[in-house]
Amino acid sequence: MHANSCRSNWYVISRVIGCGIDKPLSSFLLPQSFSDSKGKSTNNRGYSNLPGIKSNNAEFNFGSASLSIKDAYSTMDYHYASEGMVTAPEKIITMPDTEINFDVTSELLVDLQKASSVLGVNDLVLESDGTTVSLTVKDKKNASSNTFSRVVGEGDGVSYSMNFKIENLKILAGNYSVTVSSKGISNFKNSDIDLEYFIALEPDSKYGS
Image (cartoon, rainbow, N blue to C red; front, side):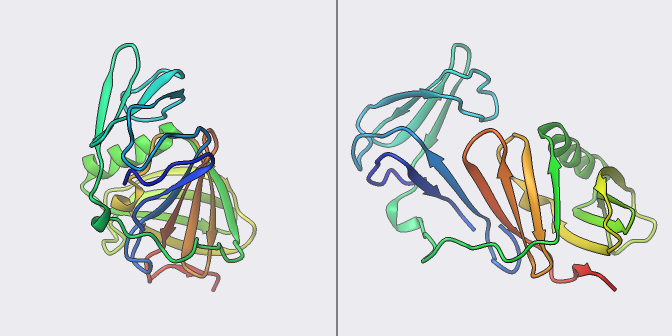
């Protein structure tokens, strides 16, 4: 994050997620207004939705070199990147038509990350046999791979295997509405705050026969 000139309805654009896009892209709408490009001490209160910060009344303090977020029990300091290190896309990604949509809870995101670590596998596959839709953590190149799977919806008659890398799911904790396009990109939209991620699918993803 760079402490750029701040105003009401300011979008924070972070890195771009995935293989086709090459890096993760997210946007976050900050509804409050802030002071200046050097982030002189400005306190704003709101729901942080950050790991370890549990309060719905967390305090945001924009200092000259870092952002401090704290509640009654915890403090998080996030140092700004230098302006030259931050690259914003020339235009915001517009999602193509999507064929798949489902919801994923904060608890499921944690379960998927834990399963990947415990089982020693790095692939996350959104798959359907046409009847049910599930998210499966596995090694897709190994037929005898350890797996963890959770049903997330009902199928629509179409079979598919939409592949992600679990390391690209480094997103803020929360509940998300997810849409996926067979053109190779997905959108994770946070259900609680104005935050969304665009995450590219792996090139070997398949939709339909």
